[in-house]
Image (tube, rainbow, N blue to C red; front, side, top):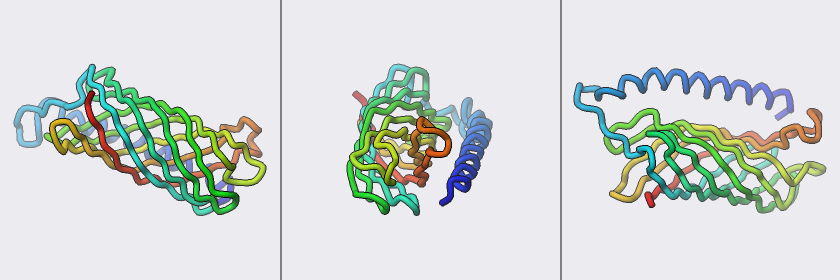
Amino acid sequence: MSLIFKEELMRLISFIIISSFFFISLVSESYAGSSKWGEPAIESHFLKGARFLSITTGISYDDRYGNISLIQLNVNDYIFDNLALHYGASFGYADAKLTQNGYLGGPEVGVRWHFINIKSFSIYAEGSIAAAFQQYPLEESRPKFNFNLQPGLGVTYRFSENIMLRSGLRWHHLSNARIQGRGRNWGYDGIMCYAGLMKPF
């Protein structure tokens, strides 16, 4: 992809995500007081004060640079009902097209909002940012340190008393945030599919 095309794609994806957040926030209001059939609302599993440990694995693909596989380990603190601050670390492997394959990883932080809760299911929006230290750059002359941005949508399912399953899609963006100037701000952009587990503790 060209730099101009990627920037336009990023703007389009950002617009879609923001528009989706606005739409689903309106839809979610209908679930706040009662269910579809007029029954009492289902109490959220994600109340203020709840804490979960989560492990997630995912893979994304960029047609220019290759694919990146990640494992993310996070603590999820619910600072309000249905709204969590999550923090931890991600570790991964880049199957690069232009340079050597190598490892990457770093600390990350993000937020998650469960805007719909229906019985054992929830639907959420989330976003995270991480520092990515790479063994090898994905393109020659590019830095080994980049920023990792991952906004997206997902679902959870209460599998058992202490286990939540989760899965979803994210936009996976990796770039140096123009720290070397606009002309040298390369970008990895891929759609990430992921799945994971959450356990209260």
